Amino acid sequence: MEKKRFDDSGTHLLKLVRLLNEDADIDIIEQTFRGSPGLTYKLLLLVNSVATGIRIKVKNVRHAVATLGRQQLKRWL
Image (cartoon, rainbow, N blue to C red):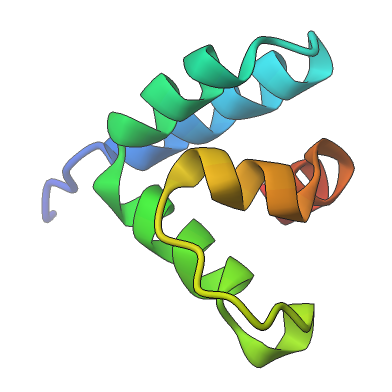
């Protein structure tokens, strides 16, 4: 059998969902995203995609969360 490494991003996902459900401060949400570079990258890809219809380039997590909105962020997570 091959030993699989525990994926730390799953822990961050659950923490982010919990923080969004508790309506946590954006600073705490931003710090949690900093703990998972992969999630941060995927969030920025999502927000900067053509599907969102945003014409400006989003470069940080705080702007991405504000642009996307907490409800949409919950659905994405």
